[in-house]
Amino acid sequence: MDLFSETWQYLLDADNWTGAEGLVARLLEQLLLTATALVAAMLLGLPLALWLGHLGRGGFLAVNISNVGRAVPTFALLALLVAADWPGSADFGPYGRAGLATLIALVLFALPPLITNGYVGMREVPSDVQEAADGMGMSPVQRFRRVELPLALPVVASGVRLALVQVWATATIAALVAGPGLGRIITEGFARNDYAQGMAGAVVVAVVALVLELAAAAAQRAVDPMPSRPSLDRDHELSVPSTTVTEAPTGS
Amino acid sequence: MTILGAADSGPSCYSRFVNEWFCWQYVEDRHVQITDALVEHIAITLAALALGIVIAVPLALVARRLPRLEALVLGFSTGIYTIPSLALLPLLVPFTGLSAATVVIGLGLYALTILVRALLDGLRSVPDDVREAARGLGYGRARMLTRIEMPLALPVVMAGLRVAAVSTIALTTVGTLVAYGGLGDLISHGVQRDFRAELMTAAVLCVVLAVVLDVLLVLLQRVLTPWTAGAR
Image (tube, rainbow over all chains, first blue to last red; front, side):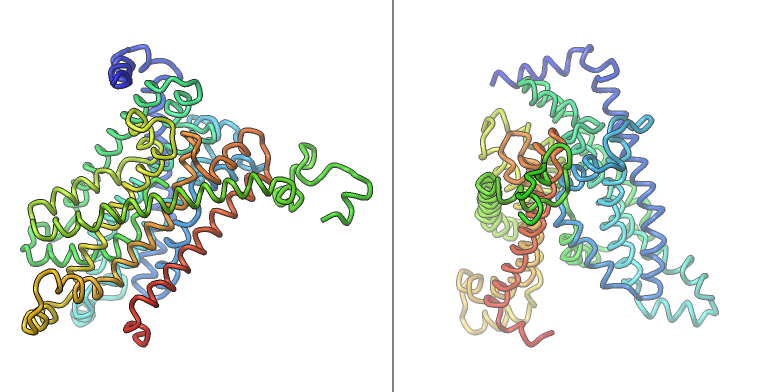
């Protein structure tokens, strides 16, 4: 395949990596977008979801929010934001053209997995553990911070991981509305029939996606309060994903 | 919609000067183009889902029999799932070119991931005593699978299929990168020309399509699993 060697050549050429529109600049742009959006979504969504889970209310909202989120195409939402009077396609600081529209879309698409997993994680803390905490004289706030939160952390962390994958994927799609990020390398390559460039951009996006996923998986393992569980529990964990599966939207 | 427009023949609601978000005039004038995009969207989505199902079922069955393969299959499919759709399509272009097949295969891979997991979860959810009872009644492996395990796994599998279907409808729009995005082509055209009526119409149709398909799958599930009707 000729295209493979051309792609390889493109990736080897240092000129393609440097410059304001080069791979490095686009990569940093997308990493900045991803980090900003993920942190913003966590600050917005997690306190709400954890508190609702603690109270045991609003389950309907937490479960359905991800279903609604899945039905709205990322691309359509981005397009609507860009075509609107606000935020539109104007430059937004280091985030580039249509930066604000992209950030808003990223945060919106990061919220569903964060809220669903935050809520479910809190609800899945066994009730006898909660009763034991009450029996030891813990106040609700103490119980929340010292018992429920640590036990919910693995599920919450898996929500963060899903959100990260989601945000990275969405940030790539921003290029379809001429937004910022690595996707620009791909769409520009296709627009001018330079498929080697499109492939090269895709390779970089995919490699970074895999690296982020592996790093997130390692981080998730690190925050688990009971990391070395017997295999019995792992089976339990595997059967849970019927809920986790239903909320793993990709980079739609 | 001709109450005011036709009489003084002023600019229609989708002209450059007005550029309204909702414009029925546009839908009437371009209904052929919109219908074509809608049909393409549905065709790509259904083809991708069919491809996903056709590959997922044998894969899940093999993975279940061979635990070592299960880890491999799940690992591979998770890896695919991590790759953003806008990056996955170019990676398929050397094999399939700029064709609808690129989109169908790409989206089929995503659907496959969800479906394999749903199938494995569903089969795992069949209680052991049910299996033992069936074995006691003389059910062999094949008959057990088709008559006992598959039906009982169906609710979980259908939940996975609903997720796959709804997200595939949304993802099809990204196919516009290789010019086969169904309604996504209208969206990208709308963005390039700053044409709000086209953009909004296509976006609304995408969501409506997702909701309709989801409702159809829920009805299908009711028909296929009549024993769960009284449960809720």
